[in-house]
Length: 168
Length: 316
Image (cartoon, rainbow over all chains, first blue to last red; front, side, top):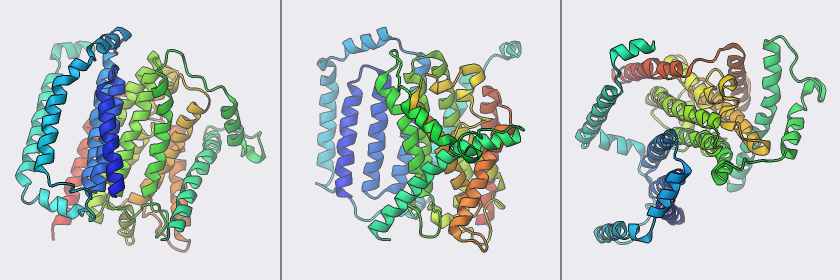
């Protein structure tokens, strides 16, 4: 499992690095999806199969697909890709790289050194009873947020009654 | 099980699924012929049974042409994705007690859902990379359809998980020793069947490739073996969904007299025939009808089903 952990982590980092340096958004999204699946494997390797499965289902399986959908509907033309290419200079990477380095330093400083892979996978029942026991407030808040999002979407998608009648 | 035995099981399941997929091409055309009062393929070999072989030879010797306007790398990856994800889904299916690649895995059901959602990439990318308007429309339809029906697919299985108390497919089958889940989870069964049709993009939900409007939809520009991979991937998808319906709702390998493996294969094959019957008998809905049915009918049904199941299980 330790070998799986390091291979998957390397793959995730490499895919993320390639993903942000693509001029074409669809190619970038594909590498993002690859990075997300690799992070799912990382979760599996450290003994969190439930998180791994939901990570792949939600992020790689739904959210990136929605991004793809939006990019396809927008229908980017060759000039847009060419314009993106001119923006991709090394200077554009300087600021984000500095911030990411600071974040990485904090993460390394905060975490115990080389905690690495866990031998014993966490049973799903443990996760469930934690979520619906001590962390129930967080679960309910997340649900509430999603519900607010649903109402907002419904409001935004609402059409004029007159226009709807006309279309029918 | 020893590593050697495990490898034999993996090879048997993969080989079995692939040869069944090839055989299905013939079975489907013969059954369609039967139900539409005509012969179907009956020239190559006895009863036309060698037709898949002839088709395979034809596909292999055709030029594998990719259009100059296509995004070549994505165009080539797309068919491989559906093939890989459909085959990987079979890994969590228990075909008989103790026989299955990772049938005891405690997130087997979620792994199948993850593979189903990754399978959507294939169709979407194939449609986009072809860089033609019919393909793009097919890809967009596939994205919307598969993303929506994944939701009901997952929710329709929640009742089964509540009853069995496990995400492991082998555990779910063992829990059905007395009563198949098709009885207490009938709504879940119906929704899963419909969602399975939509996920495999089979008629009546083959809107991403509906030939009357979109020529061939997302695979319009594909030829040769890249088309063949989409084609066989679809059949493996049907096998996977049928095997999973058997596992989740029809008691898996359970059954009297006959050995467990035979029961499992029998149930799966009957379901595959039902899939073909759907194709022979049902008209294709409009795309807005498909989406409206999904979100306005199937989603409430699955939520009510889950609520009732939860209440029944929780009550003493």
